[in-house]
Image 1 (cartoon, rainbow, N blue to C red):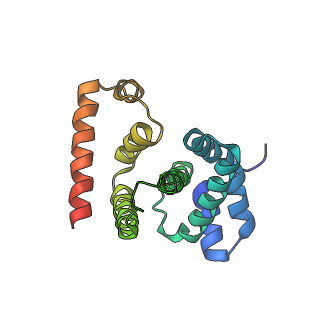
Image 2 (cartoon, rainbow, N blue to C red):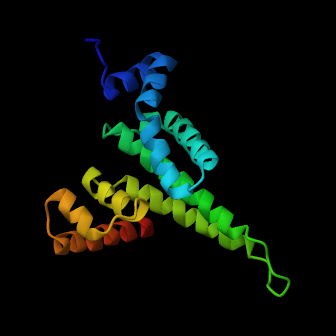
Length: 174
C-alpha cells in the first residue's frame, strides 16, 4: 500500500518548501467534493468549474491562514462563498426595465463589505458551528436533517443556530 501523506503534511510542504506538487495532491483529493458543492449552488457545470478553480486559487493564497481544521471542508466553504458572491452579482446584473431606476452602486459596495465581514465572522466560529452553517445555509439542509446527522434534537439545533447567528452578529459589529 502506498503512503498517503495527511493534509497537514502536504500543507506544511507547500508552506515551508514551496512544493507545488503537494498542493496538486490536495486539489486531486478534494476537487470532486468542491465541484459538487459548487454545482449544487451554481446549477451550471461551467460556472461550477470556474468556482472550483477560484476556490483552490484562493485557498492557495490563504493557506497560511488555515487553522488545521478539515482542509476539504475549508476549501468547500471558500467555494460556497465565491459561488454566492457570483450568484449575487448575476442577480444584480438582471436587465433593467425602462421604468426602473438604475441600481445604486454604493449599495453593491456596502453589500460586498457586509459579505466579507460575515465571511470573516463565520471563519472565526468553531468547526462544529461552521459545519452547521454550511449544511443549513449553503447546502440548504433542513434543521431536522442536521439534527439527525449530529444525533441531536431539532430544538437543540434551533437553539444552536440562534446562538451561532448572534455570535456572527456580534463579531460583525466589533
